Amino acid sequence: MEMMQNVAAPAGGTLQGKIALITGGSRGIGRAIALRYAREGAAVVVHYNRNTEAAQSLEREITDNGGQAFLASADLATLRGVETLFESLDAVLRKHCGTDQFDILVNNAAIAPRTALEDTTEAIFDEVFAVNVKAPFFIVQQALPRLREGGRIINVSSVVTRIGYPAEAPYSMTKGALNTLTLLLAKQLGPRGVTVNSLSPGVIDTDMNAQMLSAPAARQYCETIAALGRIGTPEDVADAAAFLASPDSRWVTGQCLDVSGGSFIG
Image (cartoon, rainbow, N blue to C red; front, side, top):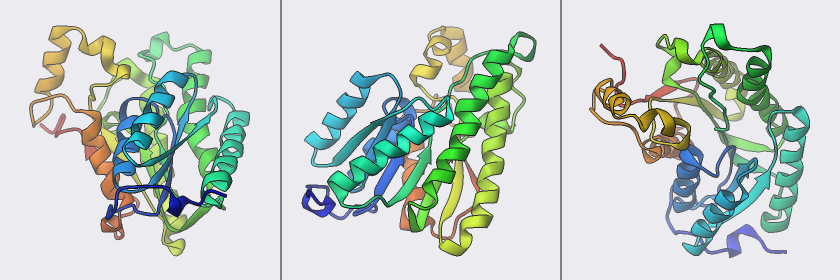
C-alpha cells in the first residue's frame, strides 16, 4: 500500500501531513485553494463535476511540483451525488493514504445564476439551493465521522450576505444559509477542537464572473467598489483559506472572514 508519508511533498509547510477535501476544486477559487494547500504540504482531494480536463490538469500541476492530489467526481445537485463523493473519497484515501480520515473540508462548490426574484423559476431556485445549501449540509454530515479531532471546516460564502444584491436573489439567500450553518457547526464541533469558519469573497476574476467582467464599464465599476481599488484574484481568497486551515487560526471559529478588498464599506 502506498502510504501518504512516502509521497514527496514540500517540506516545512503549515499543512504538512494534513489531508484536505475541496469541493468544486478544479477551477477558480477552489483550484487556487488546492494549489495553496498542496504547497503547504497537504494531500488534496479535488472534487469536480463535469470538467474532467480541468481537474486532471490541476492534478498534474500539483504532482509535477512534488505534491499530492487525487480526484473525486460527483454531481452535488442530488443527495446521491454526495454519497458518491464520499464513496470515491474513501476509496482514494484508503488506497493512497491508508486511512479514510481527513483534516480539512472546504465547501466551495456553488452555482450562481444571475436571476432576480421576478425571473427566478422554481427549477432555478431548487437547483441553486440543492448545490449551494443542501449539498454542503449533507457533505458535513458525511464528513463528521471522518474528520479528525482538531480539524477545519471552511465554507466559501460571499460578500452578498452583507449587501443587497437583487441581481442574484436565490444565490444570495443560499450564502446567508451557509453562514448560519457555519455558526451552528462552530458551536457543535468546538468540543472536538474543530474550527468552522466562512470566507466572503467579493468580485473575483473567475469563470463565474467572466461574462460580467468582459464589459469594460462593469469591470471598472467592480474595481471602484473595492477600497483596495482592484478586482480580487482566486489567490487572494486561497491565502485566507490557508490561514483558516493552519494552526495559526486555532482560536478563530464561527467567524465570517471578509475577503472582498473592502468592497461596499462606505
